[in-house]
Amino acid sequence: MKTNRMCAIIGNEHEYADLLPLTAERPLSTLYFDCKYRILDFVLSSVANANIRSVFMIVNEGRIKSIFDHLGGGREWGLDSIGSYQYISFYQDFVHKKAQGQPCFGDIIQFLKTSKSPYTVYLTNKFICNLDLQAVLKIHQEQNNEITAVFKRMPADKIAPDDQILKLKDSSQIADVATYRDVKIKKETYNLSLGAFIMKTSWLIDSLENSQSLSLEEFLFNKLKHAKNSTYEYTGYVSNVYDIPSYYQANMDMLNIENYNSLLFSSQKVITRTKNEVATYFSSESDVKNSQVATGCRIEGTVANSLISRRTLIAQKAKVEQAVIMGSSRVSEKAKVKYAIIDKNVKIDPRVEIIGSPDNLVIVKKNSHVTESVYGGKKK
Image (tube, rainbow, N blue to C red; front, side, top):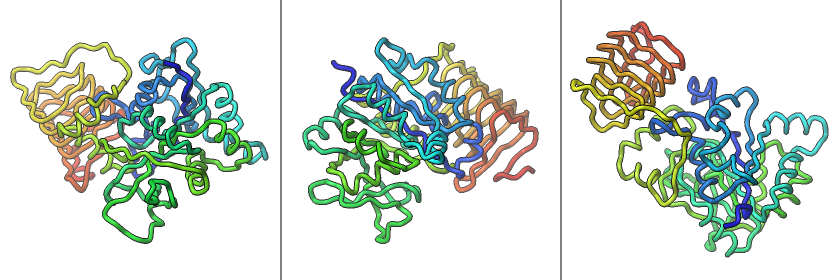
């Protein structure tokens, strides 16, 4: 199979204040998901499964370390092979170039020309889904249009104010695009754009050469209104991550076997960075129900309806319920955690209680040492 039919541009433009403090030191795309994955894995896996080897990634200055830490050399996704081509650019460069009167997308245009791919895919960073790009490309080729957009029918309560809603014609072509906050006629479900597009590369280059937009994603949504377009309806599992409740629920959805299988065990493999670790140890006193536990953990206490990431300790007589615990954390003896998100490398002292509720989750920041009990976000 040819490896240059498509090249890919991955945007990391979406960041939300409502995800703080989880995104204080990392972008949305490297948030933990389902114990061992990062949100970025789903975009990279779609790219790898489509045999794409030329990738351009847009990132924000100051939040690149966790991306590099996770990507490494890109081996797991086939991005370190002969003929592969990776390029990383900062969003702030677009701002500087526009201020200097230079073309904003010069680096992207150069990448597109270098890739020599007839088609280009753009993918955003906030949706967790398992997208078959080869299937989207097939629809795009059959329709012979300039751009094809992927959408999912989603309920109103799963949509962020800045998400883009597609209004479709009977032929499944796009009649209009509107930001959800600007939609005047309220409905129960909407055609939510998943920020995924496939385009003819020649058309994209021509369109970008005279553009002064600062956001490639915004540019593409504007072009949808005027270009020859088509759509592809994605019917699999999707999580839209834009605040703490949506992030928490995305993880909790993985405790439902139907959601888990739909996302992670379809025909499309989901790839993450390999960690060579020992298996998790469960002591004879441990009690684990309806939970997921990654490798390298030690479970001696009670875990229920929770997701526990790698290298975490749940000590004797500790209780963890309805919680998401990220890697390398320690829940000490007789401590309790319920309705909480515990970030990476957190230590919770013995007998300390961290208790939230479904509507008021407790968030514990990365590298914290919790010495006092916390109830509903307040110390005792």
